[in-house]
Image (cartoon, rainbow, N blue to C red; front, side, top):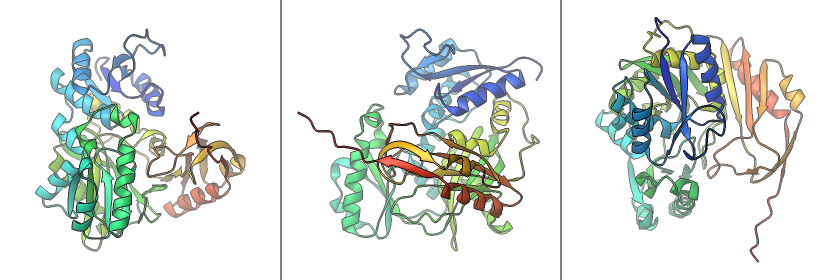
Length: 413
C-alpha cells in the first residue's frame, strides 16, 4: 500500500472481532475508525473515538457516516451493520455491496425469491403475516416443514413442525419471540412475518469466502458433522477442510457462486450455509459479513484479509491456513442461571485442543434455542486431519460440567 488508507469498521464496541480488526489494522499500517451503536450524547464513554450511530435508523446512520467520515473502505461486522455499510458506501462512492443486495441477504423471503428466479433448488415457501395467525397456513402447508423469522440469524426462532398442531405451537412461539422489545426496537417490516418452507433433508455445510469485483474466493468449507434435523437447529461443530467428496465440494462452490450472483453481492466477506442431498445443493442463506464473533479464530488472518480487500488490495493470493481446524459452539443445555463450570483445565488439556473460552458470566440468565441468541462458550482445536479435530472437540466438551440453577419466576406484588 503506497499510503496510509483509512477504513471504517461498523460493529459492536465490545465485540471480539472489533478488537482483532483493530490489531490487524495496526499491523498493516491502516487507520481504522470505529462506528458503533451508542448514544451520541455521551462523550466517548469507551475512549475509542468511535462514531456514534443509531442502528435502528440505517439511512440516518449512513448519512452520518458520509458527512463525518472520509474513508477509503468500509468493513461491517454483523447483518445490520452490513446494511448500514452498504448505504454509506453508496453515498460516499466506494466499493461495497449494493444496499439492495444486502437487504436481500437479511430477508429470508427475498433471498428465497432470488434463488428461485435464478433456478437454484428451493423448497416450497411462503410467508405468513403475524396478525393472520397460524390456522389457515397450517392447513395449507405440506409436512414436515420449517417455520422461521425472516430476519434473525444463527438459527434463532427456527422450528420444525411435523403436523398442524406442531405448526400452531411453533407459530405462536416465534410470534412471542418477535415481540421481544429488543427486536421491536428496530421496527423492521420483515419482523411482521413468519416464513414457512419445506424441510430440506441432508447434510449441512458452511462456506467462508470473500468477493472482489464480483468474483468469489473460497477461504474455507466447513462440515457440520452433527445432524440438524430439528425440532430446533442449534449449530455446534464446524470442521474444515470438508470431508465431502471433491464433486460435492465443487457443487457447493458452484451453487454458492450462483447464489451470490442472484443476490447481487459483489464486494467483501460472505458467510454461506447450505444443505446437500441426492437432489443437489440447497442454499439456506448467504450473509454479507464474515463468520461471527469468536468463531473467526478458526481462520487466522481472516480479519487481515478482509481489511486488505476493503483497502483495495488484491487478496487473490493472500495465504490462508490449510491445516485441519474446528470450533464447537457450546450449547446451552437448559434454561436457567449460569453458576459455574467444572473440568475447564481438563477440557483445555485434551489433545489437539487450542483453547476453551467460556463466555457465559456468573448470574447470567441462559436461554437455549429457539429463543436464545448466545452460547456458553467455544472450544477450538487443530490437528492433522478433520477427524482428529472433531474427536478433540467432542472429548474436550465431555470434560466440561456446567452448573445451571433453575431460574425462579418473577412474581409481581
